[in-house]
Image (cartoon, rainbow, N blue to C red):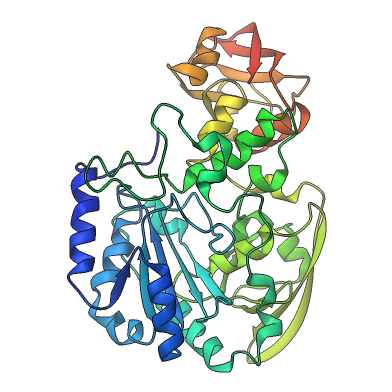
Length: 426
């Protein structure tokens, strides 16, 4: 159930290295050299972080590398490609670690202008549209032209304090039998020698669990999408609102379809990833001020975020959710039954009804199987919870209740019959 990969992962990584080293535009895995060139030329940096073996985002990655319509725009940047996450400077590079294609635009001195990372491309490897990426690059260039005079609108974009300098400093990433090194093993199996970006988030979460501490909501629901607070963005613009959900914080604040978000939380917003970064660093109950362009006029809008707003984030497709599925329930993937299916099964609309779509077979992911849970069961009670929850909400709820291993009372429906089971927390 992990991210789908290319057929020849080893060959793909080596081909990528050979291709980039044979051309002049992109620096390959050498940020320091690229930064020196940016300082020399005064150009901004474009840093692309890409997990080559993952098939997800292959479409946009190829378009960024080869699209003729981007060529002149890329010439305005010093471009560097990073695939080695082992020695990644976590005090400088902070982004959505579950994405297999991310980009950061910054000044030669390291001031972040903006981030880009698309879940639309993540979901569809054939998706090659680059209009949104181009709009973000154009906006970053405008910011660069006004820097450092505009620095006050950028300070919130900068990396935050973190306990680990590199992924190799995160204790639970290292494998004692085959430890990772700072450099990739180009003379051996290069793919096996590489830390995957999602392991950064996995390691941060595991460290809390290993210490017997409750996981912060921010780690359970990283980089929340705009949909978490009730609106979607057009894919071909920097931050134009495509739709607003009825009754959501966005609608209650007065945001409207067609609004162009200029800033939020005191930060200029030039992409969906920028907005996710801003949301990621808010409190679990907070207030956000927006500046939006509506019909040529800039207006202020204030959004109140209620307690638990992060739990509306859909984390079901994130690869980083799989380790949490092992922590909560022992390796089950679940899905909230839609209303029509609930009616067919004589289940009410307001109760817990999570269908088990997958039960793991190995290691910690087989704990549910060992406890007697089966694919097709409907989870209707767990740890006293019986009200309606999505899978994302149920994961966060139980991780906020239990900092370590526990056996919880649970009830499933199996062939219409109630079955009591012992639900594993690990």
